Structure formats: C-alpha cells, structure tokens
Amino acid sequence: MKLIRVKDYDDMSRKVANIISAQVILKPNSVLGLATGTTPIGAYKQLIDWYHKGDVDFAEVSTYNLDEYRGLTGDDPQSYRYFMNTQFFDHIDIDKANTHVPDGSNPDIEEACSSYDKMVKDAGYVDLQLLGIGRNGHIGFNEPADAFSKGTQCVDLTESTIEANSRLFDDPKDVPRQAYTMGVQTIMNARMIVVAATGEDKAQAVHDMVFGAVTPQCPASILQLHTNCVVVADDAALSLCPEQ
Ligand code: F6R
Image 1 (cartoon, protein in one colour):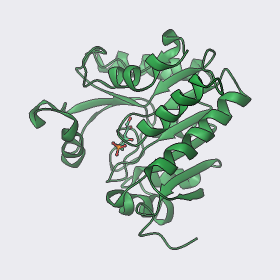
Image 2 (cartoon, rainbow, N blue to C red):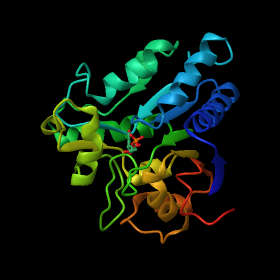
Image 3 (tube, rainbow, N blue to C red):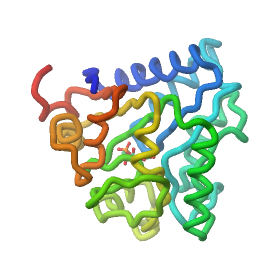
Image 4 (tube, protein in one colour):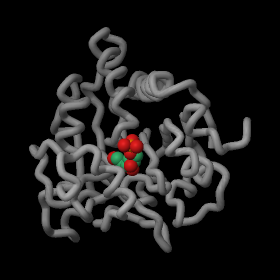
C-alpha cells in the first residue's frame, strides 16, 4: 500500500482527481469504479472543472459504481444513481449508457446481484477503483463480517452506517436498511485502487486498514494484499498512524 499524506479535503480532492485524470488520459476507454458519499465530491468537482478546461474528457469512459440502496429508483434524490448523475455525470461528456449502478429498484436480489457481477466481468473488471472508507472500515457497503464477500450481494446496513448516512436524509427513519454492493473480491480485481479519506472520524479505520490485521472485521484491511493500492489521506485521518 502506498500512503500519500495530504493537508486537507481540498488537497485530497485535487490529488485524487489528478490520479483519475492521468488514468483517463493514458487510457481514454478506462473502466472506472466509482464511489458516492461525501469524500469523492471534491474530486468529481475538480474533474468537471478540468473537463470544462479541455484537460480531460470522458467520451469513451465507462463506470461501475460500488453500491445502491435497495428499494430506491434511480430518480429518487436519495439514490446513488441520482447522486452520480447530479454530482458528476450530468456535467461531463460521458455517455450515460456506459455508466452503471446496481439496480436498487430490482426486488429480485439474486437477479440484481448476478446481473451486476456479469456486467463488471464482461467489462473486463475495473481499471481504477475509487473508494471511500466507512468509520467501521467498510468499503462499498461491505460491513464488518466473519468472511470477506465475493461478488455483488444484498446487505443489511449496520446501525453505525445507518446513523452516518442519516445526515443526508430529511428524516433518519427514511434511511434504507438494505443495499446492493459490489463484493470485496470484485473490488480486489481492480487493477488499481485509490482510497480517499479525510477527517478525524476516519482515523481508526485508516489505521486498521493500513496497519491492522487483515480481517473481515475491517473489510478495508484486505487492501493491504492488493499490489497497486494508494491511500490518499489527510493529517486528521492519519492521526493514529505512525509517521512515515
Ligand atoms: C459509497 C460507499 C461507502 C463510502 C463510505 C464513506 O459508495 O461505498 O463505502 O465510501 O461510507 O462515506 P463518506 O465519504 O460519506 O464518509
């Protein structure tokens, strides 16, 4: 794992955008694995800015998002599809037909998961996977568990994740209790992984991801076994880590 220490959120956003931008410039038809949440918003903004300046374009790029709430349709403002459209895809030249998010509106768990796995596999897996990290070490919605997950699965969200996500909902009762998420094995199939983290509330998770035992109790810890994984984290998120 390579650690890149940054000053703050803006610094992290620019560095992450730089890495994604380099990937797309070097391979215009890149397959990107994307994340939602608060962490990547600044990087998406930066990429939109560079797109408008003519520095990078996404015409040939295809994307696979990590996760989606089960039970929400893509036009629901709380859905991750809606988030991706409004925060990123609507502002660049990507062909929306080439952007993929698990289908939260599909009630058939088996079908929703296997069809997403097939799409990612048929795309040849992901060139660059962008990840945030949960306070409990989750990646995607792969929560602490007794075993690492493999393909796309339907998960019950933990109370800590529901609570963390409730800030984005008008009424905490509206936070969905289940989600479809890409599995850990699929994430590990990405040829490069970039984990972004800022803030003190991520410090324990970042420490355990980088320096802890590799255990499904901290799903992100498996990234220690990836041969091309970069962590871009600010001083606050690295505050429990030994100085490098
Ligand atoms: C989002 C995702 C989650 C988030 C994580 C951190 O698609 O898969 O694992 O990356 O919960 O969320 P933020 O960035 O809001 O702190």
